Length: 240
Image 1: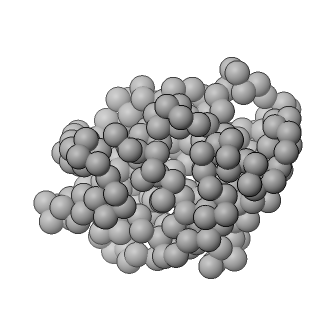
Image 2: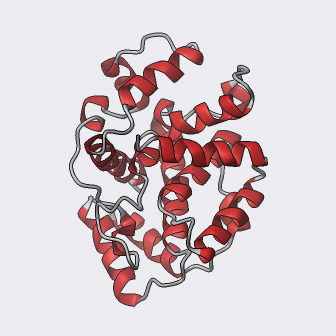
């Protein structure tokens, strides 16, 4: 599967949407959080090489080409989607964790590395987890019909999904909504925080069904109330 490539493209498109709105500065955030982790050089080129994410491209990008473009009542590029939370998912989730701990340091070995600091198979697996969370969140309002499922699959294919990922996406669009099953896919506490953050990014918390899904997912992921609230705050603040 090529989940990493697809999710990187979504991050780039999200960065473009968020920057147009005057929100998240992904490069600045990468430097800030990397310094707190003792990650050495904070230059965009160096970090891009280490993580597998091309920071120069990430900071550009056009209109948001999200899977959830077909969601009922939302237009591609609508402000209901919190672009910045997708663009800087790993670093924002880590920042939320630190804030919830009143700035206390945390150990990557125990917590897991942020998405942007992963490489190779680890980044591929995390990308798949986050794509699954996005798809489940996109379905949370219960209004995706067969035509919309086909459109979402077409959007993924247009981003270059291989045959294996295409089939995987179709299975996710048909699978029962199960917060516990989704939470079991998290490979670390950091992955759990990122999965919740991307879910917040594509959900309208004013919709009772979507709000209920977020609450179920937070419980399944074992997120404490303070951390849950901080992740949601980070998603909003990423838009500026």
